[in-house]
Image 1 (cartoon, helix red, strand yellow):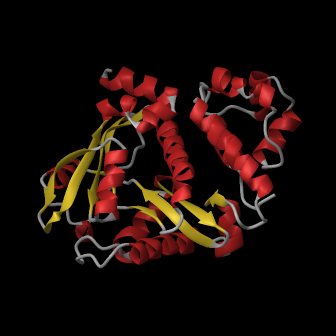
Image 2 (tube, one colour; image 1 turned 90 degrees about the vertical axis):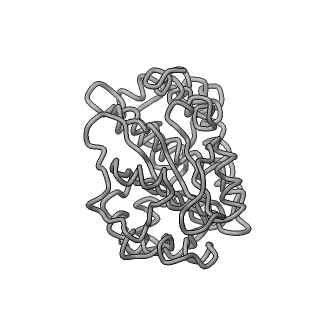
Length: 298
């Protein structure tokens, strides 16, 4: 068995924390919903076991999980059982941070910024990853970024802070300069409503393309958590700085808006909220598809 939390454990805890009329479902309530014992729920959430195959359908019927999410959890669990102790991909969480970064999420954030610097070719200062801009944002919005590890090494990440309307307009017109951003210019999704998410980087280390499904599942879980709080994206944008980045944007169903003022090879991409139901995110999660259809129409 690998160390770190299983995808099933991570998703189950996240679902409990944000479901229910009062924002949280207890282990006892979840056990009743799935028709298993409270002890079984405890083992699931401690990555000690996985739900029996003949009960997997209850994850869909009772919790609204999609077929793809359930399969991803099962495949992650099977890979963890088959892989050497430190060989499988795993999401960064408190347990991993304790083991690898001596309990410091700040050190983990610094390592994630270093990952982006390593994997991107030299970029102009205006768009290059840097600690001054992003470390305070990562500190303040820990749930707005995720990292996949292999052993003690970061191999993939995504980040999605929310821009204010002025910076959203700068993005759409190709004039957004990341070096000018600051924590004070980020929107905090405290109240229900719609927001604009900006992704400064989706990074997959060369040779670790197989991490894609786990990285995608973590982002879908993030969107689901927001939707349970009635927080939705009326759009999410990104700037591609390479052919590979542009292909990722296409694969996610994003639309090309134009080019950035710094270089015509840097392209602006957006996925509107109205397009999320038909996107890979909506296909992965019937819950997201229903929510975004209700808010933005089909």
